[in-house]
Image (cartoon, rainbow, N blue to C red):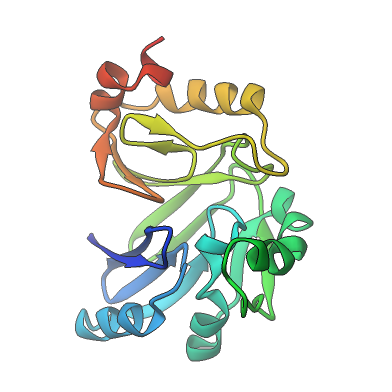
Length: 204
């Protein structure tokens, strides 16, 4: 499995490229799309899916450009389908003045399993940062969006956020295999084992 990140926009979003057997997915195309496309080409991969862990503007800013380039729909959790409609206006408030939503958005749900190459993508619904926040689990790797960071967690004071729901979501993640590698939406990668020891939100 190939895993590569491109840092995008002023919020430092990790755009994750995950490849296997000549196919790939892109998770959270928050911008810097030319570099993302260049990386896909250099790795000689064919894009299969464009996924969003949630619909905040910093995570979807480049989704329309990626969709236009590859003629692929954008996938997001069904609970986020209403939230994404307000992303353009919200984007203007935080500096994304020319944000365009993708033309085709397909909802998925908890327990949906999608395949590319020889890999299975497991959807874990982890509301709290937003109603439709998800993590994507691929083998021993968890792409955690803004649910879990190295020694931190996602904020819950934005529209649709809920600390009570985030706490429940974190309990789900705590039960994963400790050796699980965490690839967050912002900041450096970590492991669940490290976070169980050092992240006060998980160790309590």
